[in-house]
Amino acid sequence: MQDINPIPQEVAGKVALVTGAASGIGKAIALLLHARGARVVAEDRNPDVEQLARPDLLPLVADITEDGAAERAVGLAVERFGRLDILVNNAGIIINKPVVEMTREDWERIQAVNATAAFLDAREAVRAMLPHRSGAIVNIASYAAYFAFPTIAAYAASKGALAQLTRTLALEVIEHGIRVNAIGVGDVVTNILDEVVDDGPGFLAEHGKAAPIGRAARPEEIAEVVLFLASERASFMVGSVVMADGGMTVTAG
Image 1 (cartoon, rainbow, N blue to C red):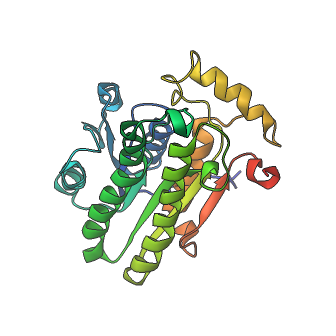
Image 2: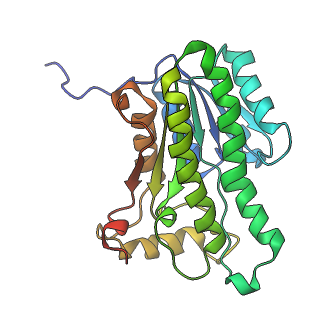
């Protein structure tokens, strides 16, 4: 009997760059892209990203905030695989401090990773995609792009900036066949809070229970949304911020 729900190979033959790929959502994205036929450059400043090495999955240890990092990452994809079709701006960090306790260094570090590096990678990716008149950029934003709570001012501002970068860049490049979209991610069980609380994954799992769905997401659930937005199945989606937050923003406020 024919399988009526085959595993989609929507990115087969594509070349992708994923930032923040050593763990959590980024690792899940890189592995799913690869499993479905893409050739992948998986970038992270954490050397653990090298554990992902396998045929057609190339780890890159790099700090995305450094000058020239975006050019090197995109250049590596083009050099090794011939082109770049997909960029996933996933890398992100957070700080939990009231504004009055936050230093300028705290603020600028969050913006550098979550917003500025995404801009730089997107700029270089578009330059690589333009000759082919095709491509897809998926930015990992957050429900914090739309609402906030105390102590996340820097993070919320950075994700708001990423959402607006998504919309503006989408308008600039769609005439060249390049689609830009984002995902408003809710609580996902990852290690992003490990420098903030004793048990980051445990905290996120508990915090996620406040969502209407009653739980936090697994990284693999977010990766599936990324694959959809990066594929031709999402061919009519331009400048969207797709909420994958378990319903959190439906009830927020």
